[in-house]
Amino acid sequence: MSSLSFAGKRPVLADLVPGSLVRDIALVAGGAVLTGAAAQLTIPVPGSPVPMTGQTFAALLVGASLGMSRGAASMLVYLLVGAVGVPWFQHGTAGLSGASAGYIVGFVFAGALVGALAGRGGDRTPVRTAGTMVLGNLVIYAFGVPWLMASTGFDLSTAFAKGVTPFLIGDAIKIVVAAGLLPLTWKLVSGRTQD
Image (cartoon, rainbow, N blue to C red):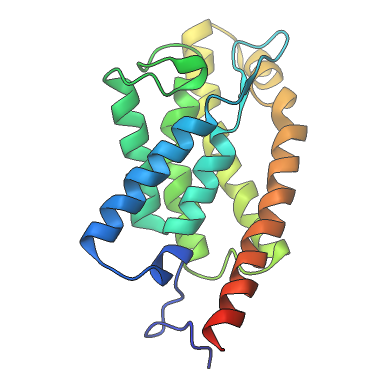
């Protein structure tokens, strides 16, 4: 049995950091700040009202690293703090209006799902991590596309063409990076805890 087994439950990376409530608050806040910083890495997508940003990647990594409850809480903090006026959405914007807001709402649910899957070992191998990240992306799209339709008047086909298709290659690259990064981190941590 691995030294990383916690009473039948698989830990997420955050569980390896000593502490309790103060640690959890710091990790939740840190995940929100990381996502806000990643949102500033923005690339306009020609023909789409939604830019490509680093926030999706950050949101999914935060979910996997913090687990279901802390991952969802971190993304909820990101959403709420931005909604009340902190300019940490893409291009330094705030508020829950515009074509991209649905994707941000989706981060909360994706963070919970990805965190739950990570708690079941969904971040331990490249194949599992890729599957976990694909599911997280699908959740984000499930919230983002209907919001995009409502905010722009696009039909489903147009919303998909402008709010999903241009992002598939970038999302695939992010998934490949995560599929390498998370299992490698677990391998390094496992080696250190057994020494």
